Length: 395
Image (tube, rainbow, N blue to C red; front, side, top):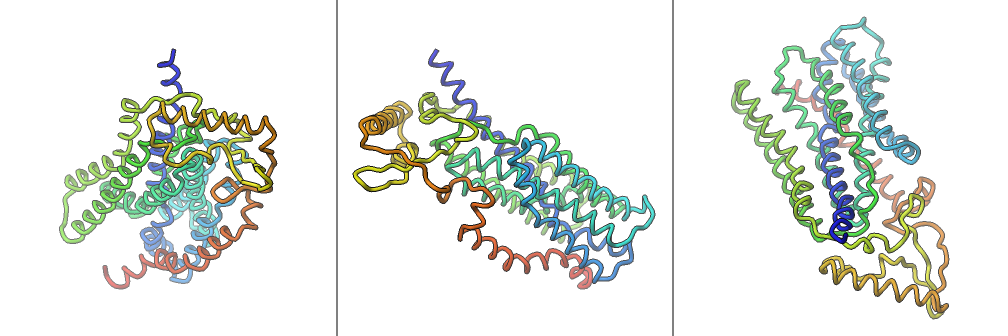
């Protein structure tokens, strides 16, 4: 009976690792905005646009990539897979229309039509990013920093990954890059959109988390170094189609490599006592319930999870369960004796979940918001105009 209970309790932990890996794959093809410098020369030459008109398309792309509060709000209303599906529809319809216009499959349309299509298509990227980040942050509440860093790292590499896949296709029609942008990410997200979701049960840090994140960091660094090396070799040497296919095959293997984490944990996961994950009743509305304790006339903001020392997570499961149960018993006894008075606090603390209105009045959120608004413009300017700069310089 004990063995069955342990196997059941370890299942959510394996699922969270699987969700994390699938979120990496979504991020690996979600950096559509980084490819604007590659597709803008094709749009410019085919449509006969000048540089000012291309810049207007770049602004439409930036606006679509910046409006992310909509998918964030929808995550609170609809299931995660529904939000992913909305992003797929936007990406496919938006960039599909751009491809039809640039490939001259439909009659030429005004500039504003392309602006709307690029806005809609690029806005689908924000749905992919939001789904991946929201799911993994909720699944790993004790490791939010590493999770967000790894996912954003894969998103940064997505442009180079898609470029290498397009180089392998070797299509004579340059507009096929836009077609690949419309179809490729949509297919990947549809294939795994029912897997990427918040999984209830991962409430505490595990001793294997550090090694798992270190391995994933290493894969991300190796992938970045490999992409850089391949790009340099392609610039210096004229590679044939067979060698390009081999290089892309190695690239795909590196992208798929993190799947070994949940596979290995399935055979080497440590047993956990069910009481460790049920110190507090777990419901959808009270996932991170906090309390304010009054002891000896002074108020202490606390929760049972925060009362235990951080090094307790590194103890053996049996010893960790014994100490947590002892701490829980002392708190319950103190509450029963009247020494502890539980009182609701106003608003969440730093590191907890905030609503949009709660975040808007916090200095941390405002500082990050204005820092991004004021500092990200230079990078976007380079990305939007890099294709034109390289074509002028003859690269």
